[in-house]
Amino acid sequence: MIFSGEAEFVALPGESGELGIYPRHTPLITRIKPGAVRIKVAGQAQDEFVFVAGGLLEVQPNHVTVLADTAIRGADLDEAKASEAKRRAEEALTNKESLIDYAKAQSELSAAIAQLAAIAKLRQKGR
Image (cartoon, rainbow, N blue to C red; front, side, top):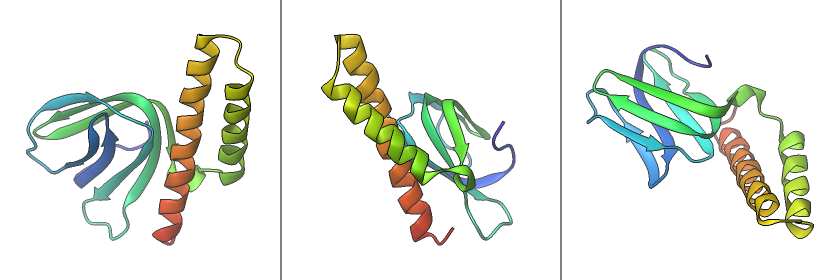
């Protein structure tokens, strides 16, 4: 588990766009896209950031559950690893053997690009 606690606000990339969730939000379930989850923790000045790739979001009036295929704390993101993953995915796209290889490489490229964008966002926030 990456985070469990009381939050004033949660923002994350949903399938249809960026979602912002406050307490007593209307219930929903949606797929999440690779990107940064921002958690405004009650009583803390600094937001928590978590990179997620793939998974589901469930919103109930009093809690939010994110089931992610990949979750990495913002402080643990590694730009060199993300850049290398992007390079490998781009190489795999050019050397694809089948449609399955192409789809896998596209997915990996999307996740690497989203991870690099999350790192850039964290830098802007001064973290």
